[in-house]
Image (cartoon, rainbow over all chains, first blue to last red; front, top):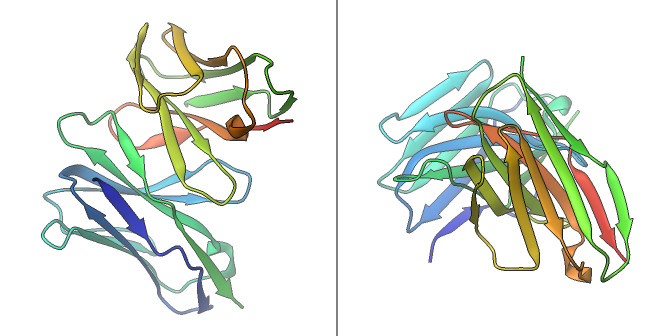
Length: 113
Length: 110
């Protein structure tokens, strides 16, 4: 069956360090992969999208990598700040039907001052 | 700019009562529209998505239904709520990939 796995345990890191979150998937051939941020009681906010033919994408302090061989995406936040504390979700868009997107359960990041 | 509205923000309903949640989008045409549910501490579960007026795809068989009477309006309904319908309901729209979410409706079924 299709599965998207994110580390369900919270990730605690010191302010200023780089946070790295992992998204693994099985039995998917995604057209693209996305990362979202969700704060408590709010809807997710789109951060980055990376296509299956792209290896890496950057936006300010954020970097996403996408390895379709390993079936894995890594999400990096450099120079992390307490304001980066949130839950981060990865989402896969299915190839052949890009309208459908499936979300992982998310990883909670806590940046400690 | 595009805006997405959802209402109500919170709702407490007894078991067996009907439900109607509404979502509207402004500033875009022919968006893909989505309804998700998020149980406490859980991920997003896709309930329905729509690529056009009257076109609804259901992902999870349950006592919920969705309708899209207008291009930028998406409605989630139930005739009789169950306790298990409690959760955080999110509407989202997309055009080319990334999704934009509304503020959500917190539904508690008692």
